[in-house]
Length: 167
Image (cartoon, rainbow, N blue to C red):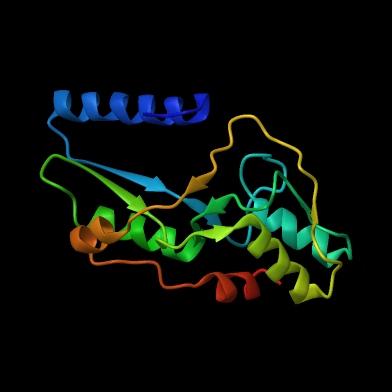
């Protein structure tokens, strides 16, 4: 039950792919990626890359600006863990259709992320702006148990280690 146009379009894409797979008799794994971050992420897309954006601000010695109250929760998953989920899904195809969440199962607030990244660079304390971005959901965290059960993989890079790889 998506609460945004973004979420509705993602679900529509899943429905299209599932219909195609059923019609073609092809196995399909849908991986629902949480907030993937890591080296090489686009610095220009406003709906992805918040962690990379925070690193760029802090590395330049600027305060990180935080939307709303900073208590928005996200499941940040490092790119290497997302790649491993894709590899496992290819190695172990389903009989028909499966939908798996890819994430850590741990919520990190935007304020926690900003403070940790600012501290890595000795940047100023993050500033809560109260600004609001249409379409944002308050909390997005997955349950990765089905991913581990189906494919034998789970996220292994914790938020601190993943951010050290970006510094």
